[in-house]
Length: 155
Image (cartoon, rainbow, N blue to C red; front, side):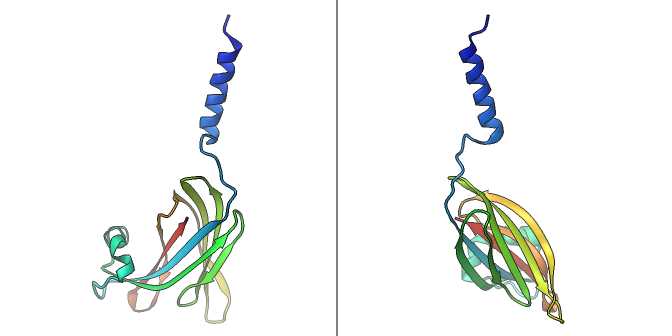
């Protein structure tokens, strides 16, 4: 006959692994950074703040120049919304869904105002990343064939 303690221990280990309880969820606020980046094929200029990310951006988005157009940041509780306006009628809402000691899960919603001032959602996605690591999100077209990339991170 099997020792019931070993069965309980094994069952708990499986539950912890399956539910992710091995890494405790934190109930603290998350600092959110949002950077609006103009990507272009018209030049190879890269803003100084983006130098360390330029190669990854070039590979993922196939543009040659990256200009940091706007930076915004705020502190927000889990399941609360942080919103900010971006460039060219775009705005973003970032909602931290989960946070652990090393990772954060963010819901990102990008909207754009049309010529009549009506806002329309152009992107809604959920990303999970290491705390402090930017996640690039392609948002939409700008003028002159340029494209807006959003860099979002929670820390």
